[in-house]
Image (cartoon, rainbow, N blue to C red; front, top):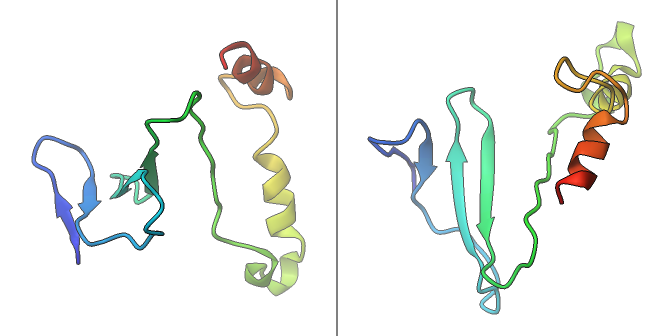
Length: 99
């Protein structure tokens, strides 16, 4: 199986079989975005809400020797403010308001 480029979409899509339980009725799509982010899209027609999850595939074993604790520090950075949501809890409040 390989990634194929859908001509009208700005991403590559995995065209192989995604392994799942025979009891799993959800639909899965694996795509690679132009910035190389890989996303697994799961469609569940029985779901009442939508959700998003982020997995940062790095950890403390990847810390440079001279910067022990860097991965943990960057993990905390994911929860701090951004230019669009500068206050620490602002993005969380936005999600709560719009869920």
